[in-house]
Image (cartoon, rainbow, N blue to C red; front, side):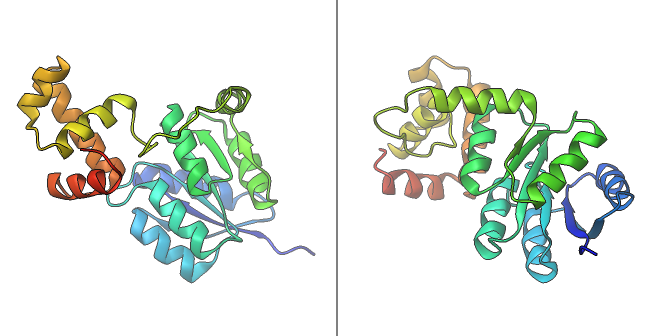
Length: 214
């Protein structure tokens, strides 16, 4: 008799996490061994529990699901990560893949699809929802650019904003130079800090200048 597939669920929404754990626990051959509501807790729990599969949300209250995935895969290369998230943008998809995720589904997926994906990742397969798979195939059928951009997790506009931050410009100056509203610039700056996992402007400037910006 085969051992059950050991699964851990990571999501900061208690009701969604409870519902998913309940669904998976009812699947024959599947054992839910743990759950976590934050990225840092997911990393420590994964190290302690050593699950076969971690179902990972990307939006978490401390470190992102992408960073948590990177840490888990580095520490536990035998553990597969299936991203289950609301984010359907290409940047999130490819950032998760670069972090080591084996699968990517959107939260609108049906229960059967999620269960199949969990077991597929547990078998070492790469699993993507149909819309995500189309995007991935399109990416690999397109010739790669000659030079990879620095901070590929940022959009091109966010890299422009970061370069100006690294040059010491204020938000007001950046808004004027790029013909953007102050609110749009604030949103870009907040997104940059989140994606780079920095606490503020000073740390962002250091990261940017070390990468050759500014």
